[in-house]
Image (cartoon, rainbow, N blue to C red; front, side, top):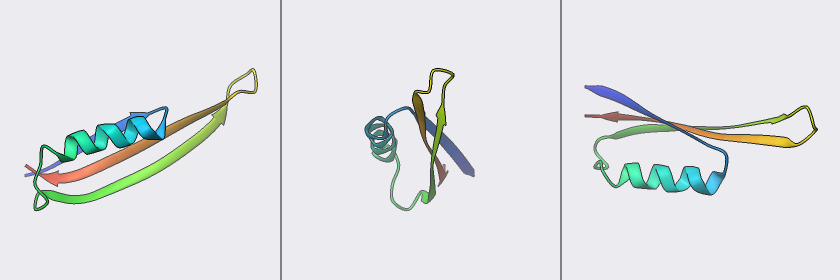
Length: 60
């Protein structure tokens, strides 16, 4: 069965930690793909906001 896990963090190091923690729980054979994206926007005060996201496709 195919499954997905989605991770979304404000800081790239936090995303890295979450992904590494998840990957420890599955074998290399279960891992199919990892998709990564970064989004940036400005809030009304002009402060930049970042969103670091990843989707992991794996076999259960």
